[in-house]
Length: 261
Image (cartoon, rainbow, N blue to C red; front, side, top):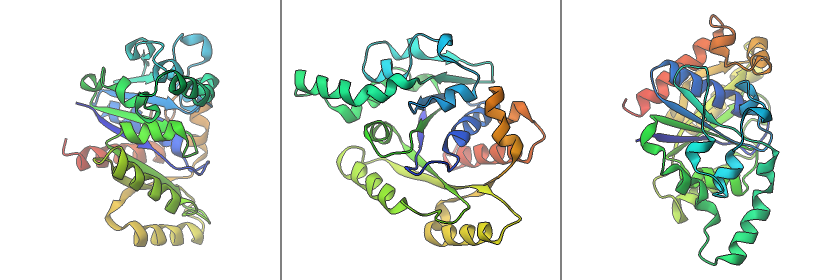
């Protein structure tokens, strides 16, 4: 049965999509059958694995509004053990579609649609990674309800913890009302520039706040890591010798270890 992990932070630019792509790819290389779900209307995770809108008929929008079977939206990538459900701008219209469905059916539960869809494929994968949009809207709520745990990327920059309290409150609310088994998988420090003092100060601050929840792995700020998505590849295929490749390999091993695999 798959472990479902959402990458969540309502703050943009924290390395959420980069981590979704590269953690999923690294888990695949560790021999874990992995499904990446692009739940952001911008579709950056899909583009980052070399897909464009002409490559598929169904996407996460079709899955979440139940207009297609989830298996019909899954695309097997050329990367080891890695499949994806891609996203398009259509996903931005899910709120309107859900309002219509609630008017037609009073029993419709808008926060549980992704969870219901995933029931069909959970037994097929070892890990399902969900790349959420930078907000705490209906799509992110669907991800939290469907997930076993969340990874919170926090960039090693000033105002790193801005908005984290709101995110934690949302997680607690989901735990209390919709998904009592949801837990925090870990807090991931990203975009570390080792040349600056602020980065080291943020690491200390985050570890003081979250203690053992913080992953040992820290993702460095590297040009090659930024370049990789434009070539449609995870960093492990774009630059196998990069420090970022090693970092995501270590992160995957930490995730596997935390889950007792």
